[in-house]
Image (cartoon, rainbow, N blue to C red; front, side):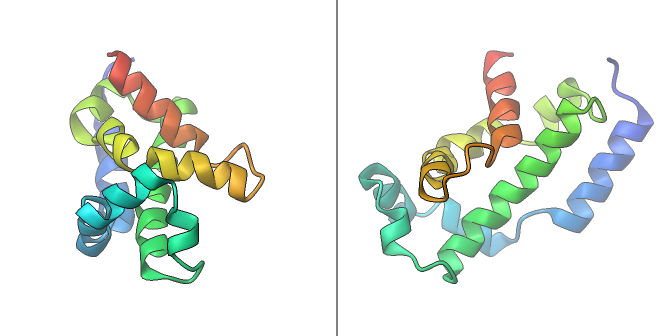
Length: 123
């Protein structure tokens, strides 16, 4: 599928409406989060209503939505390869999101984000 103006228009709208905040991105790239990911203690370290959980969820939700639209054929992977760094963010927070599947007994959590990141890594 070739990139169309409609693809670009949809991505611009998504970015305007749902792009993760600076605070969320800053937290995802913080050293504190990196240490917690390695220890697999994220869900013990941060309460359900904490800013940390909100920040991770904010970033993950954006990429989950983009991944879902891609998997439904509404966005072109070539465009996403250059536009969104899903694989880079999955590397940072993917372990937390996989752990969330276990913690919340919900194997379908974040599957679109993971699939998009995997497709980007293979390309």
